[in-house]
Image (cartoon, rainbow, N blue to C red; front, side, top):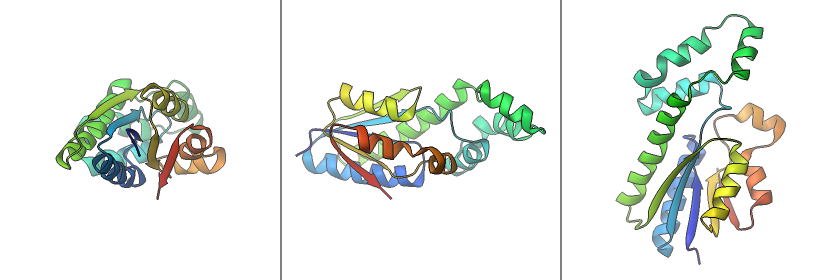
Length: 173
């Protein structure tokens, strides 16, 4: 039924549950599992800090996140966000941790073909482009990510992908 399954990951609980389902489907159908992470440019500093603590990445990212959280004035925070002050290097470290752990989980559960990709840009757009590139016939993703408040106002990435994808989409809660 499925030959190519795309599983976008952001480190959230819902994405981790989606990974479990994607691994199960890939194993069952002997499908190629494509793991994708789009850099977390739109996630607020407290969410990044919680993620770093949970994943044991505090040493890698703590000083930069604490610096960003320590900014006093609201105007300064807005200006810093406009400049995308979380360095790309930190975001890539987080990305590599997420896709690396996911690949290990997939392989240890018997998935034969697993590939990982890290991209930058608008998450929904990059997921849809990557789905087309890898000829995905199924996208399995979390229904909610790390930036829940923004999603409530503008619509979530999973909503956008589900509406625009040309293939089966499974949003996992």
